[in-house]
Amino acid sequence: MEEQKDIYILGIESSCDDTSAAVLRNGVLLSNVTASQEVHKAYGGVVPELASRAHQQNVVPVVDQAIKRAGISKEQLSAVAFTRGPGLMGSLLVGVSFAKGFARALRIPLIDVNHLQGHVMAHFIKESEEDHSAPAFPFICLLVSGGNSQIIKVNAYNDMQVLGQTIDDAAGEAIDKCAKVLEWGYPGGPVIDKYARMGNPHAFTFAEPHIQGMDYSFSGFKTSFLYSLRKWIAEDPDFVEKNKYDLAASIEYTVVDILMKKLRMATKQTKIKRVAVAGGVSANNGLRNAFHEHAQRYGWDIYIPKFSYTTDNAAMIASVGTFKYKDKDFATMDLPAYSKVTFK
Ligand code: KG4
Image (cartoon, rainbow, N blue to C red; front, side, top):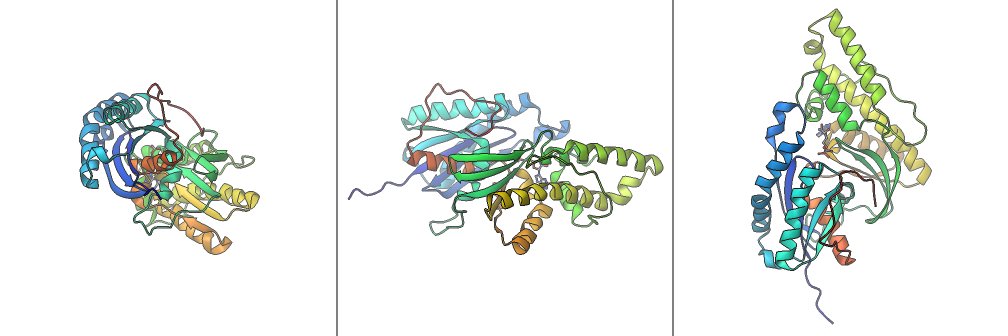
């Protein structure tokens, strides 16, 4: 019998403000290197033009480091997987162009990856050969990030059905906007998380949406928060400083409550009790605790990613790349990047 060759996939992620490269061997993580861009902090959000320039500076050293830390030579790579979209067009183009050039130079296949599919498939990155912690198909995945809030039924790595999604803001976007008006910096998610641990989640109540089905909406909550805050500050200019922990805990509680309600609906309707969470907001402790409570109360099997796989990273791109490589699902050299998509 012919001996099975090891599959080494280089993943490249450059959809927003993190330049990341990773190497997986048969799905097992060998390296995951990320250069975050500090340049945006001064602007309260990602500046696309600055992001693409920073990617250009970072991509070569980041890929070089990822290959070195993996302890392999570039000639051992089986394929190059890259984020094709969705994301910022200029940022994506840096990763897409680099991946194409690198794959061509090495004469190995090129694999395009949907960034959102990558977040979901972060659960399949193995820490060792013996790691069998990935959820079995089908499972439900709550994908929550700065740009997306979706409930996805994952039938297979390449068969994902969106059951519900936000009709306006994403959960992370809503949290970031609250933090912005509170002048807690950007992105505000980690600050809200930190303060929330010291506050009372029931100190303040904000409006929750009444949307049919499994779709989300966060704009009503955001407006209700803003109006309440304006009133409180008019009554007491030091209101925010005096109540910062309770404010953070109440914001976090409301967002988590909105997210979990629809997720319960999804598990009821599909009768699937394997429930995963993915994306930047899955780093949030309130959301993680809610998952643990639901596991206890409703008998869910829960899948919560390691912190390093919650935000944008190339290991998740290489994870999808490994699946696609096995199916020989390769990209052509003329494939363009895309800024907006759902799932293909
Ligand atoms: O997936 P991600 O890294 O990329 C984008 O979609 O941009 O998600 C970033 C989002 C931001 O909104 C950020 O505030 C949020 O994830 N986030 C958090 C936490 N860490 C990151 N939100 C709440 N609690 C956290 N600990």
